[in-house]
Length: 348
Ligand code: CP3
Image 1 (cartoon, rainbow, N blue to C red):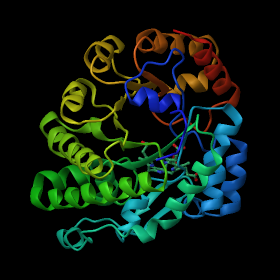
Image 2 (cartoon, rainbow, N blue to C red):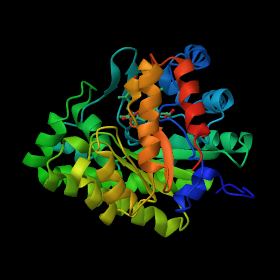
Image 3 (cartoon, rainbow, N blue to C red):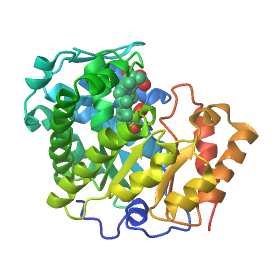
C-alpha cells in the first residue's frame, strides 16, 4: 500500500466516504487517442513489449495524469498477460486484436500449470513500484486483472473476433473441464492481485467485460462465484485491499452481484437504468461510471447533457466518475478536457 499521508479522493470513496466533487478517471485512459502514447507505442515496437518494459509502461501510465490531472492512474498492461504467464502464446496484431493459441481440447486445459509464475510478470510489478514513486499521494494507483470468465472467452476461442461461443459451448458440453479452467484462473487472479498490492497499488479493478452475455444461472456460476472467491482470497491476504468489480452488461443481475461479491465499488456500463442503479446498487455500494464513450467522441451539448445526467443520478452519494467502457481511439482530446472541467465544476 502507498504511504500516503492522506488517502486519495478515490480511496476515500472506496471506503464509503462521499466526496463533494467526485474523483474521475477513464478506463483505457492511456491509449491511442493520445499522440504521446502513439509515439511511445511506436518506439516500443510491439504492444506486449510496451507492457513488459517498466520505463515505457511507467511513462504511458503517467501520460494521462500529466495531461489531465486525473484522480487515478491505472497500470498500463493488459488482462491477457495472465494467460501469457500461464504458458499460452499471446500476440497483439494491429487491427486484428489479440491472438492466442486456442485451448480447445481438454488436454490443453488440464495441462495448464496450477500456479501462476509470478516471475514471468516481474516487469509489471516493477512498473507499479516506479509509477507509485512518481505519483503524488493524492493520485491513486489502480492495478487490475481480467475476471476468469472474460479471460476464458479469449483463452478458449484464441482469436478476439468477439466470438464467445467457443467458451460458452465448452461450459455447456464439458462443465468439469471448463470449471477446472475457471479454478486455475481464480487462483492465478488471487496471486496476481496480491502481488500488485505488495508492489504498491492502492486499489484494483476486476474487468469482467463479457459478463453480460450469460444467462442468469451461468452468470451465477462463471461470474459471481469466481469473483466472490477472488475477493475472499485477496482480502484474506491483504485485509485492507480495495477492489472494484466491473461486470459489464450485468444489468438486472447487478443487485445479486453486489449481494454476493464483497466488492468495495461496482463499475457500471452506460446501458443501465440510472434510477434502478441508484436505488438498487448505490444504496449498497459506491459506484463508478458510466458515461457512454461514444458521447465523448460526439462532444458538444450532447456531452454536457450526458455528463449532467450521470452527475444528477449519482453524485449525491459515494461515486467515482468514469466512462461506461474504455475510451475510444477516435476521441478528441478537447472533449476529454471539456468533460473533466464539467465534472470538476460540479460541487455537491
Ligand atoms: O485502462 C488503461 O489505460 C490500462 C491499460 C489496459 C489495456 N487493456 C491496454 C490496451 C487495460 C485495463 C486493458 C484491459 C483489457 N484488455 C480488457 C478489459 C477491458 C475492456 O476493454 O473490456 C480486455 C477485454 C482486454 C483485451 C484486449 N487488449 C483487446 C480485446 C485488445 C484489442 C482491442 C483494442 O482496443 O485494440 C487489447 C489491446 C489493448 N489493450 C490496447 C491497449 C492500449 C491497444 C493496443 C495498442 O495500443 O496497440
